[in-house]
Image (cartoon, rainbow, N blue to C red; front, side, top):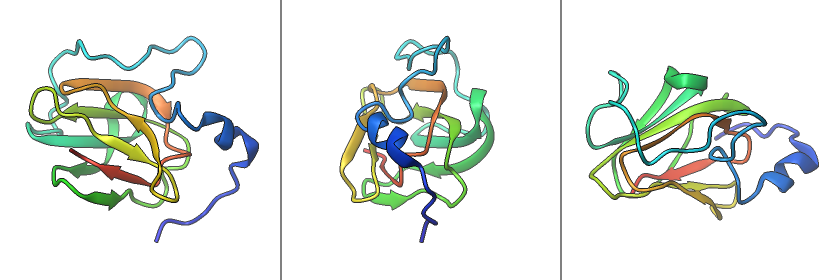
Length: 122
């Protein structure tokens, strides 16, 4: 079970923006993307502990709600390398929709995992 960390009112304010919301000066999620990172094969939604697709935390491809690993409580990144047009859903603590990604291929090189507890890859 993912550990709960105090994320305060800031996390509540982030609801609806989730990992995809750019930080000040950061780039927004992109549906126009370069090649996928080498550790994110075709058909997968990949989550990274660090910005710019560094330090792979998980790869999901199955179509059901999966809990993300412990330790993803702040910045990070994701790459959606699923079947073209497939959107992943990033879900909160109570499995509420926080952010639907743009259809694959899409990415966010700089974001925030704090409000995300689960992912439904497709």
